[in-house]
Image (cartoon, rainbow, N blue to C red; front, top):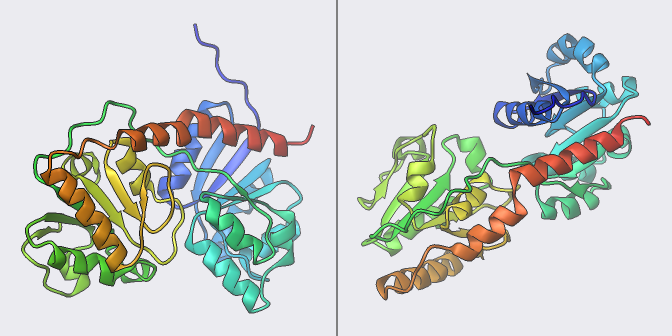
Length: 314
């Protein structure tokens, strides 16, 4: 009979529901007394309601944070004397560097919290803002099943958020220009729709909207195109690579193709299309192998477990 894991300590995870509940379950499976609460944001009242749980936690684990002086997180750091982890995931790092430029960065947050980043390039970004951090990938639930064959017709999956605020860091011009450049290629755009964008899309673009399960879409796609001006680790890129799909992304990822801007992306996409038409485009097996090695959920969860244990008093 498998022994029950030994309790390691109390961890309160604050953040977006997807990440927070994922970590709550993963840490609980390793023996942590882990609980999740929605991120209180800038609301002082919401932070106040969490005071008993924050005080009781051995480790407070923030997935994303504000970093300005006298933000609720800064006041919390003034009062808390137990470990605080901030896991930076993308636009939050941009806000921290902006606070640094304005001279508004909290020294308490920068120096007293433990800082991890879910993408290597964010480490350097935060370093320029005076925050020392380390790369620690978030465990992404990826499939280890054999990759399905590529679709008979070359198909492109493109990601563009439905919310205009979230689209601010995406290269929308490049994304929307690609279907016009390849009128005989099928494109799927999600989760944004023509209504969200306020434009008419060409007939070779499908917009299914938000989907609870992207596995069927990945199976129907040959390549994922993701173009951003700023990003953390893109779950869509990792998930697509794990299924043996090709990925064209602004940022580097093992097994993916790095390209940014219309001309560069168009050239990379055209090369893949030519290989497909020549019958020389197999599933991206090297991308899948590298992804399973670099983003193994078991290995990454074990690494987070080790990191958290190191923060507990001896």
